Amino acid sequence: MSRHVVLSLFLLALTAAGCSSVPEATVPEAVPADAVLARLETIRLPDAFSAEGTITVTAPTMDQSAGFEMIARGDDSVKMSIYGPFGITVGTALFTRDTFAAYNALNNTVYRGSPERQLRSLPFINTIPFEFFMGTLQGVHLPSRIRPYGAVRPDADGRVSFAAVNADSSVDSLRFDGSFGRIISCTRWSAGSVQQWSIQYRYTRNDAGAVIPQQVELFVPLRQTTLTIDYDAVADNAEAAQFTLPVPDDAETVTVQ
Image (tube, rainbow, N blue to C red; front, side):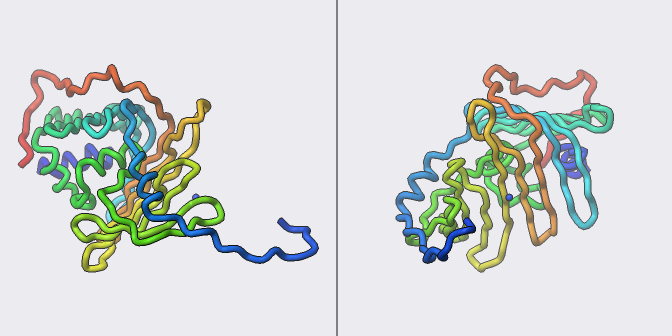
């Protein structure tokens, strides 16, 4: 029972004409795999991150959206509050490497347990490592320790597509946008060539020229489920945030096993 309540709290309530002659088509030069890998290794999560927007879960049995506010520090900590109608706080969840806690304001109950165990209980992202989960919430795809297949060829718009092998022999089909310096899509295939999930990112730049996320869309075909995060506002001001979860003294505590 507690697991379903936490899921509801955290996830639901929680892309030259006019010339006299046609130019000859050219094929972009291949890009060495090492050069691509070097660019990927520069991708980092921001030291401080805050955002607000809308989180939506679409599945055969549900289609629900909720407002959220989130603060995060790198790949270590994230706190997200979920809002219902009229801006009423439904609950707040806190993830760190060592701690998971979620307060459900609707039944005045706080749930606590192992973050890795809690992630494994989420039905459609239970194969996603903690670091990847943290990156997804912040709109950044963190590549694994990958080995690109040979050379890749850029598109006319400067994006490059290639495949990469992960340590567990799964394969990622990736697309990298050099103008943003970010991976903009990834599809993961198991060692048995079964599609596990696909994810797409949309970016823009703020007035200072910094790259910020607009949307993240994660699709899990096995469950026909899509998780979409739309960012309305993004800022780098989470350094002084308190990564604690205040709860009323009379709240019931449940340990999530």
